[in-house]
Image 1 (tube, rainbow, N blue to C red):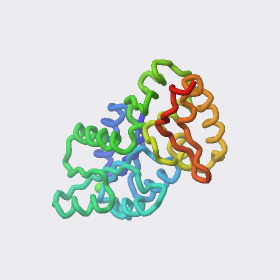
Image 2: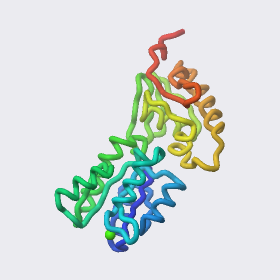
Image 3: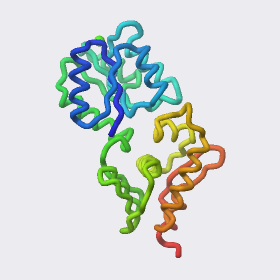
Image 4: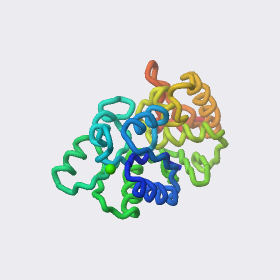
Length: 234
Ligand code: CA
């Protein structure tokens, strides 16, 4: 289930969007201004933000620019809403870092479809779709992990961690980023918690000889790679 933050000051529109997104299986939070949106994102990083351009106080556009300038929120998936349909506005919105742009009035079905497309591109772990790297396949719908035909048993946190790593292979993720994206808490949980769960995850992957797919990158974090040795070493 994906966490979606809707920033919209018109209550009727916010409610309509929230209703439709919940119906599509998302976990939705709505706020009515940039200040509350900032606070919500500071607390827990959502999987995607639907952001209205015209807000009381700071505009959605200024907020988008601010998020793009911050390392933690640089890649936060963002769909902008606007009542203005001019081409220059669209360009401005996309320049500010929006991943997509919808002009009011829009159909909620179209918004749901656009959200799905942005999530697939940027946060595939937020969708209930199976992901795979090499022999290792993670299916969130059935909560199954299969490696070369063998089913592996993982605890809930190890499952979420593996799902995230398989959805974003080859990239190095810092402990802080993993806490933010997998645990949803980058403030109160200690970074060594990540190490504890990575060790458990490697232990769970060991029977399929996939433990070495999770690399420790000294001083940086962890990375999942498609190991040539997985399943082939005795
Ligand atoms: Ca508005």
